[in-house]
Length: 76
Image 1 (cartoon, rainbow, N blue to C red):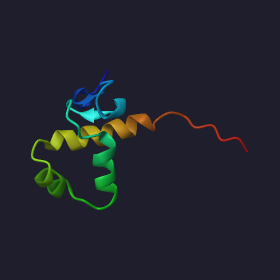
Image 2: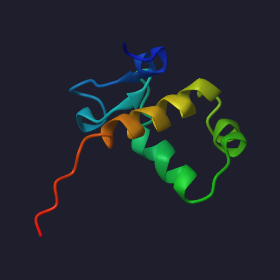
Image 3: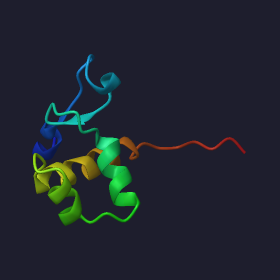
């Protein structure tokens, strides 16, 4: 079953190069992930982007987790 949070992630061919965005806005999932990776807090991100909601940040994290949950086969 698909998590309802993932419904917040949209992909549109003519928007942001077809990369995953938050709710059709021009805020890419990768933008949120990079902000978090560089130490921005959720509160800071939400203050800087008033159109975002806390669930949008959780959706970005869940999307990233789902994208990396497949088996990796290393050629040694």
